[in-house]
Every structure is written in structure tokens, then in C-alpha cells.
Image 1 (cartoon, rainbow, N blue to C red):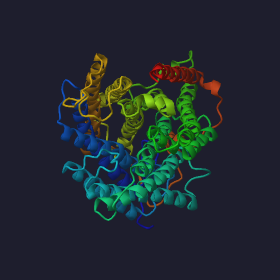
Image 2 (cartoon, rainbow, N blue to C red):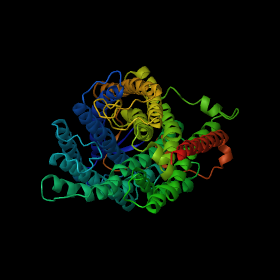
Image 3 (cartoon, one colour):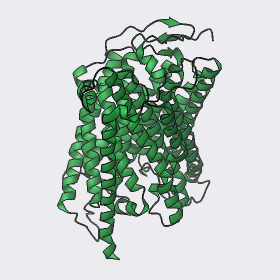
Image 4 (tube, rainbow, N blue to C red):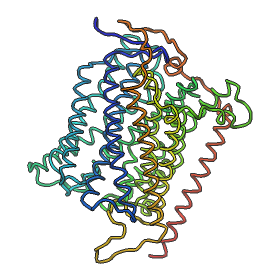
Length: 567
């Protein structure tokens, strides 16, 4: 304890434990490296699916698609999420980090595992996609790398939980943990379930790859693997919603409209969010319809309700804070006068709208057994999860980075004009990309096939001209999104390593209960019980969302009715 030091950031008032600060930086930086690698691969994949360009041959396409999925959906996001867990426990609770040496062991395992898996993919013979469905078999290093990464991530989750225990025992905070930390706790609980699912299926699959097990049942593999594959994205949902609340506090000093309501919504995530895994299995013939309906319909709707609550309370908290500052004219002066030039706010708000309108509505439609048959294994599916994981999670993490650069790294954000426009370039590119993919999927374009024309097959198929137009839009919008991602990486890397140094703040050998700045007070404090009518503009936006949701849901039932005549 004698060697522990704590730094008070003079700009936000947040307190950083020295060991936690180092681990947050290390995990965040490695995450950004994987974002860079995954972004380059994304452009190669998109330009190959654009039929007029068709950049890569089949073997390179499936290799790039495998590496892209793993690097973006698992490595980039989970490295950054571990950084968020340490930030939300040690920093927001003003506590020392539990077992920092074990934190470095966890980081090393995650790094070694992620590099091992990438090497296995790029060496060839492991192009099994992120799903790695058996009986397709990758090299043993592919599975072993994922297992090591998962063990490191699991250790990181337990360090987070241990830090909560230390903070409570040493009374570094009062009452319940702040809402942002509660959101991170939700993410950690889901992560433990997710990693356990991965271990249950990846360990025997690794043993199968080295010849110690003779057979893995494909249906059993799919059921258990999706406990990892889809639930890993549910970690993201809990984490990026916590980031939304954090940015509301950072930019507006906004507090939740109702702590109880927001915490209840997070509890619904813990109980029901993982059930959405079942929507990947709705076309599998070996599973009963009652199991599918029970998991993907009735109970999943509780998780949908939780997301809708957050979609109301996050902008509602911002509206209440803005109205207190005098922006009270009409329904939307609070939104018009919001700091749209601040990339933390613009990135967060673009993330929130895209996640709700594009990812949320399409996800509920896909979670209905009958409607799922319309778009299963088409490009609609990646269109949906790019709306949730990329627009929702990645853009939210990008927005948080603009706060962390001065607060955590003590550097001024470089290229401010570039930073100002980055969320718009990336966000608009991904909006168009997701919509075009969903449109192509609605027209039947397959999800993973290298050549949508099926050239060289006995029964080639010609899609309508609109499908080829959609794929051209996919390629162009992917290029725009990659440019936006490149802008983020340029600003982030330059700022961290070459940016202007800022005052680091006072360093002490003991924790400080002082909250020196409104930002710290808002992030570490609690919200009251604000009535929904005090956020009238947000309420009307929620009604627009509800109308769009109902309209789109029943349009898809109309599409389904159109094929009934075929029977």
C-alpha cells in the first residue's frame, strides 16, 4: 500500500490509481491497433462483395472475412471493454485496483491469444469465419489463441469485481455504486457467462483439432457457441449504454432521470439479454419451435424493453440538463443548441440513434421465428449487427476516447477539425452501409458467399439489378466508414504519442474523497426521479421510434404473407 499513488485529473476531477491508469492505457491502445487491422480487412471484404470490383479471390476473401470478424467483434471491442471495466471500478469509485500484477497477466494472455489466433488465420487453413462451425476445422493455434484470450478476459472481469469489493471495504464511495459503474457490472456479469460458454465448446473443439476427440456434434456446437458469439455482443450493449450515460455526465453534467428505472433496465439485461442468442438458430431443424419461440420471442422482449428504457432515459437526462441551462423553447431547442461540434457528444448521439432505429428494430424483427426465415443467412444479418456493434458500440467507444485523451493520457486532442468531423464521416458511412446491406439481404443476397453471381456453378443465379446497386452502395459506404475510422485512429495515435502535453495534476499516496469538478460529481453521483413530461422532446422522439418500429414490423409480416402462396 505504501507505494500506491493516485492522480487527480485537473480537468475532470477524476482520480486515477497509477496501476489502473497503466492497465487502462495498455488495453485501450491494443484495442485501437486491432481496430486498425480490422478496418483494413473490412475494406477488402466490402470491395470484394461489390461485384463490379470483386477485389480478392475466394481463398483470400474467406481469410480476410475470418480475421475481420475476430479482430473487430472480439479483440478490438473486448480489449477496450476491459479498459472500461478498470476505469469504471478504480477511477469512478476512487479505489486502488485489485491485484494489478494479475491484471498484467490477464493483459498478456489476451495479447498472446489474439496474436496467436491472427497468425493461425493469416498462415492459411483456418478460414472458418468467426463462427468456426464444425466440421470445418482450423489449426489448433486458432482455438488455443481464443481460449487464452478468453482466460485473460475472465481474469480481467474478476479483477473488476475484486476492485468493487475493495472500494466497498475501504469506503471510497458512499451508497450504491454509480450508474455508470452499475452498467459496467452488468457487462462483467454477461462477460463471465459469455466466456464460460466459449470455454465449454472451444476447449473440446481444440482437443478435436489435435486429434484427442474424434467427433463434435455440429448442432450442439452451434447452440453452445452462440452463447459466446452473440453474448459477446451483449457485453457490448451493456458497456456502450454505460458510455452513453458517462458522456451525458461529461458533456452536460447530466444525471439519470431515475436511478431505479435505469438500474432495473440493466437488471433486465442480466436476466434476459443472452436469450437473443437463439435468433441465430431459428432456422436449425434440430431444435423445437417451442424452444425457439420461448427464447427468441417472449423473454427476449424484456431485454428489448430494457434497451427502449435506456433509449428514453439517456437523451431524457440530457434534455433535462439542457432545459435547466435555459434551452426551453419548444420541444427541441435543447437538441438544436447541443454541442454538435464536440465529438464526444455527436459520436454518442449518432451511436444512440443508429443503435435504436437500425440495430434495435431489425434485431426484434430477426428474433421472430417466422420473420427470421425471410432474411436468415442473407446480408441482412451483418447489416443488423453492424448497426448494433459498429454504430452502437464502436462509435460510442470512439466518442469516449475524445474525453480520455486529455483526462487519462494528459494530451491535447490533435487535429480538432478532423476530430470534429470524424463521428459524422464514420457514422453516416455506417448508417448507409447497414441500410444497404439490409436492403441487399431483403433481396436475397447471401451472407457469406464470395460471388453473389455463383459463377461456375451448375445452377447460376441472377439477382435483380437493385441488388447489384445495393452492393455498390455497400462498397462505397464501407470506404467512407473506413476513412472515418482512419480519421479516428490518426487523431488518437497522434494525440497520445505526439500531442501537446497537458498538466497531469496532483499526485498523492492516498485516495481523496474530493470531487473537484462537475464532471466527476455527475459521473460519480446519482439521479433523482424526474418525470417523463419534463423531457417532452425526448418523449416525442420515443413515440416516433415506436411508430417506426410497429410499421416496419408489420411490413415484414406483409413480406412473409407474400410467400404463403408458394405452398
